Length: 531
Image (cartoon, rainbow, N blue to C red; front, side, top):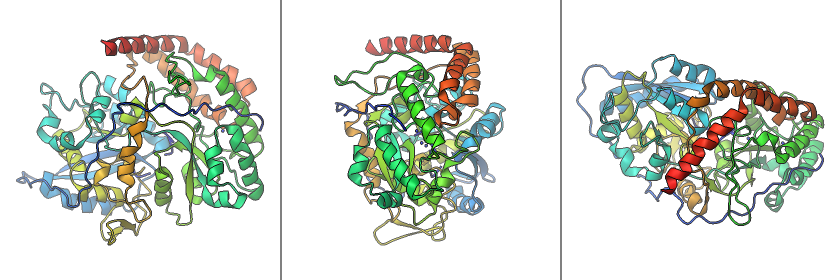
């Protein structure tokens, strides 16, 4: 969804001159979007029958990408463990790995065979690499080492999860991870500070009229004038007016991709291409660089150590690009998780509603092959799709201590230490089992489900790139991306000199070979789909 969307209860995710023209035209209505069907919100948890205890409870190591570890983690674990022990004879310990450290810590540990029983993954976050490297356990293979885990221990998942999520996340019919039952459409755009908007006269109508970076620039300038010491455009390089398919190959969205937006006739150009070589990207970078030099963007934005999350939480910004969810829901979630009761956020949409592969597989839980307790891990994931008591503890922390339930059924968050550590509700099981906070619309979860009903279906929906034939080139390209891309996309360096160098480095790393391989696989996938 993604700041990388931002840095489990937060994503998550995130640009004077003449700015680039956004082509966010109104998308044609999909005739059969694979959206989740309405699910009744559980009023009482369907608690599984307690199983006979066979020795001491096993320990499940649960790896989750999030904002940071929490000082309240031990207390939350104790509450959850007391609840699940009589149900599945297991305990859980959470390894909350910050967004910027995930590849270096969690993925490295996975590749090294370190014990992990439940592991967060996503199409935009290494899922296919983990599958092709054999790091994830097949969950529906009766001939696999653990049998058909879903059939034996995950029937609560299959009876409640929209089948579109399962089929949309499988690889050649094999389930390697269980998706969260959540929204299926995640258009990109911006959140903005409503308090500063009021100060500079930026109305809801003005927000709706923003279609390009040029439309946004005068308001950025007014925010800077009002707060000279503030850097109003908060960014880590994310593009709010997203032109391409998020998570298309597992590589950078801006290096190997295809168009995400339909033209006036509803057609999408499905040519595999390099976005950084497009005129749109050149115009965009030539807009961002002056914003940086004018002090609209933090001087450290080009560094991987710069944390946009802490700046947003403090409210020391005006606009930040990121993936959204519709109905101001993402903004509300960010306000809650910030721990800042003065923070007021609203949203600007930078593209039409779409459904693509990375949205279907945008939040999943896998069981690594290194797991020593795959059966209990599957039972735990199953509980996350059937048991509202467990899922609300995972979301909010210790009941009656960190949160209470009000008369209308909504949650009053007393202590934000746990919810602020996690990326957000979108990583936990089945959102229809989650209670909403007293700062949220009571109908929030159903709105998330309903939002995709008229979304445009990306023609690439269901395509997954297998990187094996070009692994060496991908490694080389990723090194170039890691070294230069963020600096370009935040205006940290001058694109007039650095963009040609970046493009040449990508070509030297084997970009043409990767583009050809993606095109080959995509063409074959389209042909097979047409049969």
